[in-house]
Image (tube, rainbow, N blue to C red; front, side, top):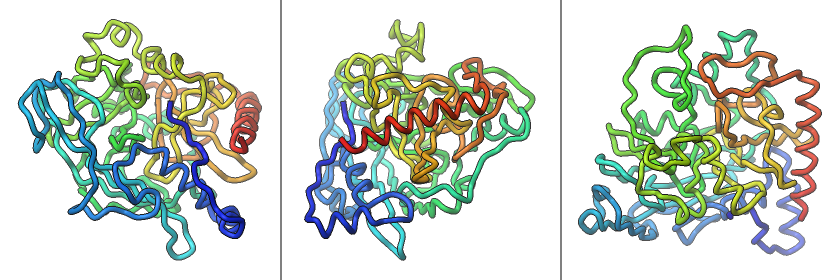
Length: 375
């Protein structure tokens, strides 16, 4: 199971520079997070790639219904080239992370729509202190629009503190992604175009009857019919140990997935490592981790704010947590409030409880995470 490990070694002067960074995350933290991605490039975490000379890695699958555009072979035997490079840089006194990916997965996928290579190239402040942006709905209706609307993850809703830049394609599939997984695959929030939970929908005043025509596969991902973009909707069980998942099947054809998708999504993490894991990065520059804490226990959804995040009040660090209740990964760009009412667009919600109770849990979890970071 992939974890963020301290793989870099520096001299004392350089270490002093790294840990003296006061505006957001540290250079060291950016480097170790970048190295936790499944990079194909040689320059990570230091040098971004030129798209014309991008170093790639081959992915071969012998169970494809149709080969990706530009791949070699004939279905069911297909080979395609992954591109992923995550790097860190400093500019104008700020620390940035840049993610370049062609969006192709490192595992097989089913489907009659061909995967297509895309140019995903985004840059944002790494782990910025979220001091000027706070999501606080005043009632249930405001909460619903905040985390249930399909376009809630759009670039237009990003806080200015993130200093987000999109140097790649600007199609709807790219603009609406909420983040990028550790294997370079785009991640969506759990909303469908109907403005409801994609997996456990519940109609409300702001929902609609738009047709949702995407088959969810065993990795809890899907191929966007319009442009061939592959993306995850949920905590992806295929992010690590995909060889243990029936990646060439749809969820409906895998008993555990069809019967209980929520439990299925975290089972691979339970079986292989009860520890916190890097899932990816959100577009606002904050890490996505989960589904377990450093203390080998599952994150309690009651400890998370409405955006699905936790905040360390002493350092200002804010992190999203992938869990098995709506909104699953990133509900909104946080930090958000703790409220005593739930969204009504999902049948799979967490009861937030009282603010006092939640904050007691929150501080305990953050203490565990902080202690873990030193080992």
